[in-house]
View 1: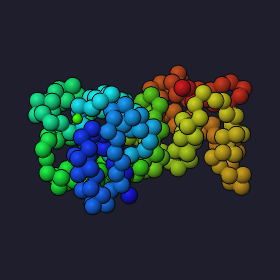
View 2: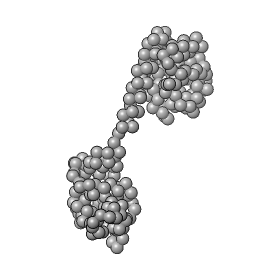
View 3: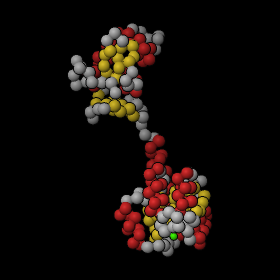
View 4: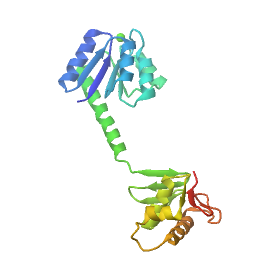
Length: 229
Ligand code: CA
């Protein structure tokens, strides 16, 4: 159940908002004092904030600004004056919406629902994002197994991809050829550590401007390789 915090000093308005939102299935908490409301808004988890502008203690401008410094949770600002709404917009405090008193409770509910739905879609789409490794001009999409060098896509074999990704995910660490072979090729596989050298050479041909002066995968003589951070 989505949880809404209302910070509103006019008791009847706060209760009206609460009643309508509860009827629509929201869990609602009310604070009448600006300072207490701000403290709860910052210290507790809510899915949406409804802030009155003129409040005792701390005003809605300040609460909005402080919430936005820390969270992306939707904020609906409520004001008795149309002029104040223009002022909030001008200040760019990061409120998601504005409503002027008097408003119809069903209008309020509709807006709260719309913002919550939009916010949930946003969170959902972030969770589905691909797993990306990015170091300087190299972008590795681990989910799609694709690689771009300075914006240009390059083709890598399975082992080249695995080796490049492993090194890029562990930058600034030297790995011996034996370690890399064990990591990327299983022990049973045919080949030896010379395979690592061959693969490094092929990867360099695709990612380096000048393979004689590698900018990404460095050779540490007598030890192994290191992905430069
Ligand atoms: Ca007020």
